[in-house]
Image 1 (cartoon, rainbow, N blue to C red):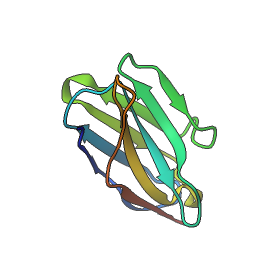
Image 2: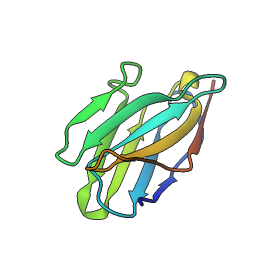
Image 3: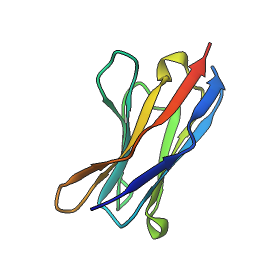
Length: 113
């Protein structure tokens, strides 16, 4: 079992910034963030492997940066130039080396126009 604890969501004005954090209870292979907006399906935001390879959704490229501290089993998502369409519940994801997915409880990000 892997527990994922997220923090850092909140309310921000368009153009502002937020930083999300997610701490895992043990080491996992890939960590990342997904989001689910109102009336929408959950979608990929960004992922990072234990080796540091990153992946971003086209909609956030150039605005969001994912980083990882392997010593702390923690992943961060720095979100800049936020837009109202970034409003969603953001979920942390952890994928073990055995290819088992775990999810955090979600943290709300609201961007006002």
